[in-house]
Length: 132
Image 1: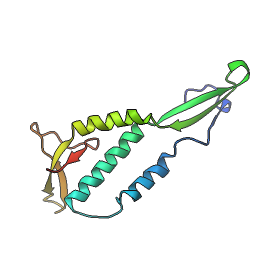
Image 2: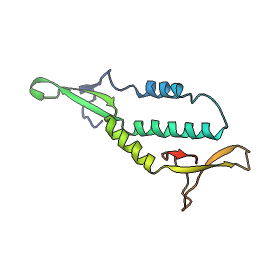
Image 3: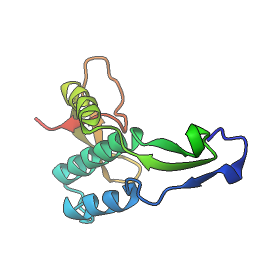
Image 4: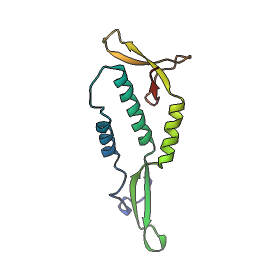
């Protein structure tokens, strides 16, 4: 992270454990179930949007240690954005959510989500979606 002398810093051990929390969240919300049901696809999509929103706020935070603030050793760890920042991002995405339809892929025969907006914007992996 832009440090001139690599031996002058170390990773802290008590950062936010995003890998564990992502695994826990998917298990808790039941994303393991494999279903071609439209509602299950929407739920899975929105869960992944939420996980991406949390991950986008992951930052490296560092603290200096040394005599009189000399920063002889720097300890760094990964830290999530404050809860209200992530909440604000998700609220924005909720306010701009996209209505979706179920479309069958002619090549594979599988059902896919397709956006339904006036200007035919394609569905992005950051868009929250809903079914009317």
